[in-house]
Amino acid sequence: MNAPGIKAEAPESHGRTLVIATGNAGKLREITEVLGALGIAIVPFVPEGLAETGRSFVENALIKARHAALHTGRPALADDSGLEVDALQGAPGIYSARYAGEGASDGDNVARLLTEMADVPDERRSARFHCLLAYLRDPEDPVPLIAHGVWEGRVLHAPRGTNGFGYDPVFYVPSHGCSAAELAPGVKNRLSHRGQALRRLHRMLDASLKIDNGGHGYPSPAGIPSPSTLTNRPLRSPLAPGPPGEG
Ligand code: ITT
Image (cartoon, rainbow, N blue to C red):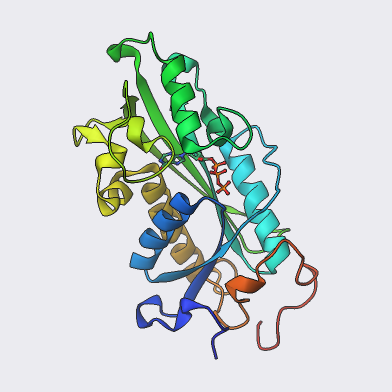
């Protein structure tokens, strides 16, 4: 029987379920849509109060995934992402979520970006989103799966559109002649850094499942705690055996 609160019963999910470590509702929406279309149900885990002390996207993604794997006792996936602006020597980069300071809102961050870019002419406004995904089978996993996606664009002079989140209203998408916040969610996911990385990770998980059945791959839904039980408290030692019935 499936754990309560888990969407694993949905026929299209084929029982594949992943813990996602994020406190960002916009990311969660996009990840749920992409992985849902690939038949994977999502169990969110909010890594509250966790310091992202890495110096790179990949380090921060690993910190978040390891934290979630430790505190849920399950394999976990995390996304670290951000906007790299050439005229700002790569800023805000890994500091994108707190560009205007700790606890800054999306609006605060966009406002600071537009201020910093006020005197930058059109031809020097190139930028790109990066998304690094890290997947760990357990907190000690020595071979995490890492997937990277990049989305090229330009920084607009003023916000446009209301979809998406973060810097989407000021990220111009040349292929579609509009901002990322003017794209329908499905279109953004087809083009975006996150959509690319998620589809890559999905292929890696499937390939890994074929090679070392029982190594990487999707956990069985049995024994996955319900979302309400996913907290920062460790459910069990990472070295303790899993719930009965799991190999
Ligand atoms: P979690 O760590 O809990 O996942 P976070 O928002 O703190 O949430 P990051 O540290 O990875 O996540 O920071 C990512 C920031 O980069 C995010 O807050 C946005 O400001 C920006 N960003 C990332 N992807 C984006 C996207 O698709 N569209 C717009 N902005 C994006």
